[in-house]
Length: 211
Image 1: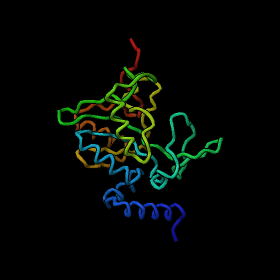
Image 2 (image 1 turned 30 degrees about the vertical axis):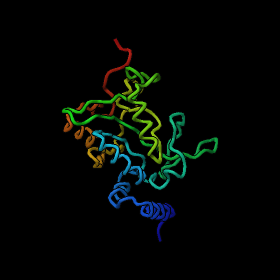
Image 3 (image 1 turned 90 degrees about the horizontal axis):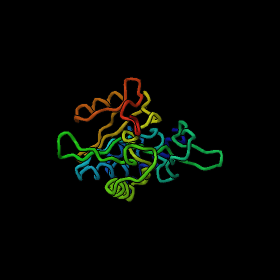
Image 4 (image 1 turned 60 degrees about the vertical axis):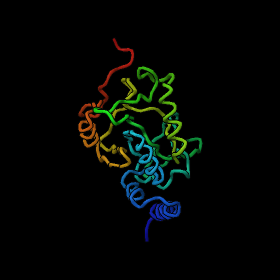
């Protein structure tokens, strides 16, 4: 007999199959924790000559996307081993997808699309292009993107990456699982783009407002 989580995941996989989601996307969701429908959406979106890097949620979150909303930026509580969190106010959220960076491909190296406030500030207006892309993406995702790209947040408060973090890269309609920060850094290097974190995972990119 399986656990309640395993039964729940099995039921969700059956739902995805009935909705026409490919087995390759369901299998990939088992690695990355992203809703299988959203795996397909990220892949399809990348066909528009984009490279999208996402820090994955907890793998156990995969069954909860679309059942409860993704954790928003105002919620500081950490999700547990189930991939969900119940706040003191009794609200339930699933571990969200964190955009790391967003690139236009078709040029070498890829051209970054800044999805953040101007100059990497914590708050402020996004570019028209950034707004358009995230609105389009969120219009198709089950679990919506909650904030801008982490790589574009030029601050000493940038949370960096942890040894347990794992990532997904979507490019040319394909999905690649990057199981660690070092694997993600290697992927960046192969793409000809800079990895803005040091060996300890601390952000070491530009700082907004610094002289």
